[in-house]
Length: 401
Ligand code: C5P
Image (tube, rainbow, N blue to C red; front, side):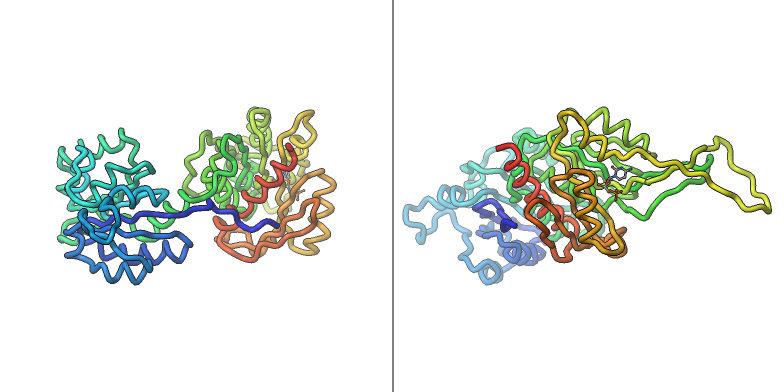
């Protein structure tokens, strides 16, 4: 299996302005460097009152720049050189004063000047007192930044260093790290339309009862997020789950297998890739009562009829998209997975241990395709999803070359 092919270059300029949240940026720098991102730090004069450049220098293994007029830069053009040597700029924390400067195109120190001179995306993580944030001037400035395609990350609500409570806390280092990591994912599915089914289906017995399974939807949602990061246009058809929906192009919540099939029929011809992650119920009650069934002292027999196989329907279409199936197995995983892959005629089937994967945040995945079996050792589902998307993009490309 090919190694993970991140963007060739993953260079971030980390700008730090004056605010108490600056102390948390040391942790962010550590996460970024550990994540394989090259970090160049630039601090404003005010930031140095909250955090020492030596800390950042040690964490990033690079000198920290603070001055517009820096003798160590050969041509005295640190603002141009630094902004050209990175793929993105993140300013965290971004103070009210810094936001005002960027909104108005001011350039009176190194960080504001290089932001004005940049030719790469700029993200900012505001952090300030809640009254400063709510002030109409700050709000106007933030609106201007959004219009200028600058990404605003947060801020969050909570207790502030000044003792007040409200909006204005900087996002936590791990949240900012996640955003930067997403930014650097390779755009392997740019321009591709991907249809994903996720979660369980619910098959009603009566007005209040039904058959469901232990699928949480976490794997399907992670794959939807990874496909978005890879630049795909994603449609997500989801059974009943308790998760935050990814920012997909189209979201279709459904209940039963028949609902899912109807939604898939509507969407599938518009898509290049179909990833069938949902744990679709194999059977449904032959009769679904509209009223609640009354309890009696007798045994009750539930008559079940098979549900349609949605993935099989898609595979059998005259012009199907590239289809990927999932199989949650409890035993004989290799044998069962290969049988399923051949029966359903799939270029790729992903198997996992039902006991380990269902409902959990981590899973081990086994990928079965024409080249055999590849195992992705146990890891968080979002990491597995990113690896899977990379594999799917490679197979999809081969399929269409
Ligand atoms: O046959 P089995 O249910 O194990 O196959 C699993 C794969 O088939 C999964 O990708 C699942 O989403 C899909 N499936 C389906 N419709 C069903 C049952 C399973 O699309 N009724």
